[in-house]
Image (cartoon, rainbow, N blue to C red; front, side):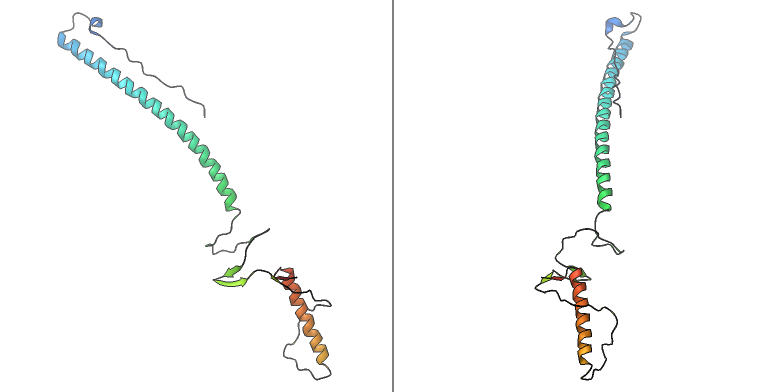
Length: 164
């Protein structure tokens, strides 16, 4: 905003020699007293004008600060996860955390190492966990269980929960 020029009220003091000679002594004193009051009023008005100008400059600086803080808040609002929000939130990119809890229960912890990757085919298809196997079909059931275990291991490894 452009700086406004200060307005100065310039009082003109009056002395007794400036008054007409036909004024009574009482009226001369009254006029002189009013002149002194006008000087005081002008000084107060000038002081108030300076103070108003200073306040306006400070307000303009504060407006700039508030505007920049508002922009910073807009950026933060688009890039944070709230601990108290009840709506669904999503996080993309890298997130450093040691664990993840839901309602106070840890559902994901740190990565567990020491698992050597399984080899062979994985099976994520359906199977009957209650199936009975006779001695001749037990090897097939065991193979099916191993393939399911590998599929689960692959999923855990893909999510970074286990590794070498």
